[in-house]
Length: 364
Ligand code: SF4
Image (cartoon, rainbow, N blue to C red; front, side, top):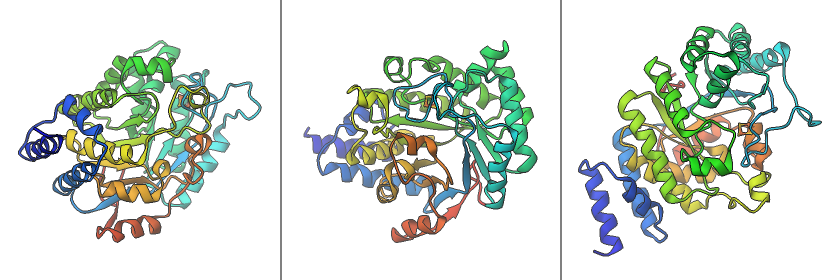
């Protein structure tokens, strides 16, 4: 069978209910010619069936509390040592000032986007969530990745389940599915050796979901990983979702390389290409048959590519953000804020309505 026939047969099988294997995902991720558009078109059709016509977004704001980080991952341009001249750690006043801006903007979600400060404990997270809750009693506080939960547990000498219970009592809404990067330890050894291992990431996400705390799922791609690593990562997320249905979405995060140690050292490549961005979205849509929502990250791919991703299987544009120092520090200049009016222009230009959603994909 020719490659063309193999792809056509596979896409037809997926529409007939076949659950794609990781090997098949690898084959699709490797396609380099015009068949990219066939895969994207099939994924777009599935998007229509599973998620409908709406292009969704959330009115949210990132809160940057500290850039001091114990991990100093090679793919990150944001984290600092505590002794660096531009290191910062906000206290209550600084956090609440940002929260007040968020309140004025009418956001429904705030995300903690910060380093993992070596002095943080479970109590630190409880305190920070409490500061935000005082100003924003009704928003979804989207906070704490499995990495932060694990670190807080170690620092406080308690289990990760206890940390999750305390975070919930403090007012966390949903857990961040970040720190996943690529859930293959061989890759993690190179790009983030100090971060939570795959098994712990999976365990903590399962613990959260089983407690009824939902989370995002993420993938950070385009550095040193292979297509097989990407497929393995998607396979892990799909298996978790089979059990819990706790993932709200897949957030696709292309590696922003410019100001990061891994790229400067010649270890990582210069982020994914446009072909890879399109195929990652499309294959995620085809492979993740239990994820209704696939997000294109406009801050990372830019608004034009984000629109192309909406024609390749994505149904969500993510948040307005109002600040994203993590992406800006890594080298993407325009990642700070996207006006919903521009999102509407992008959506309506492809004949789809823009709809504001909550963190858990309820309608606002
Ligand atoms: S990616 Fe996150 S954990 Fe890693 S250095 Fe940056 S802020 Fe720290």
